[in-house]
Image (cartoon, rainbow, N blue to C red):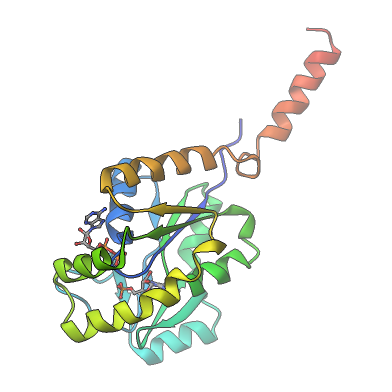
Amino acid sequence: MTQRRGLLIILSSPSGAGKSTLARRLMAWDPAIRFSVSATTRAPRPGEVDGTDYVFTAESQFKRMVAEGDMLEHAHVFGNFYGSPRAPVQDAIDNGSDVLFDIDWQGAQQISNSTLQEHVLSIFLLPPSIRELRRRLIERGQDSEEIIAKRMQRSWDEISHWASYHYVLVNDDLDITEEKLKTIVTAERLRRSQQPGLTEHVRKLQSEFEEGK
Ligand code: ADP
Ligand code: 5GP
């Protein structure tokens, strides 16, 4: 049967709820899943690798990419620009590979309203509590107090969009959330629209049926 179509797996959550951690675990589980490396104008955090975590881009270059239609979606978050370059996503779809996006609700909305909407699988992560969300941001130890306060302030704006996602997971126990995420992806790969070979297969079944085989 013809190979399946790729899913566009979108993970969103308020900052600190566990997107990057779960994205890493999902890709360790299936290395064939491609990560959509976003372009951003924010400065790299310690340990972040250019071209792997983000493509760190000057604002002028970012704006040029948007103007030339090279971004599948883009948004302004925490005073910086973020966007998903279009070319790698198209390439993945053409090759039947799944693409994983760690993007905010604005990006999720843009992709969900695009011509690719049929292949979107959107998942929202909620923290077990606001106290725990703050604890995780502090524990991550990568942002200043001021940036953490800014992220906490914006968390309600992000959470308020939870109901536009296909699936919502409360990321309490990390291992349990990971298992649920893998279950969702496994099931969604079987969505009828993701299996282009089915029509041909059923046609074959029909002719066998009619031939009385
Ligand atoms: P995001 O990408 O959504 O901003 P991260 O994946 O960076 O969030 O997670 C923020 C911090 O919380 C990290 O230190 C991570 O190890 C931790 N974390 C993620 N999920 C859990 C969980 N279920 N329980 C406890 N800590 C978690
Ligand atoms: P961070 O600075 O913590 O890496 O990301 C801040 C926020 O921007 C997160 O909610 C993250 O999901 C979002 N983000 C990262 N890349 C993109 C992108 O390409 N597009 C959009 N719309 N949001 C992004």
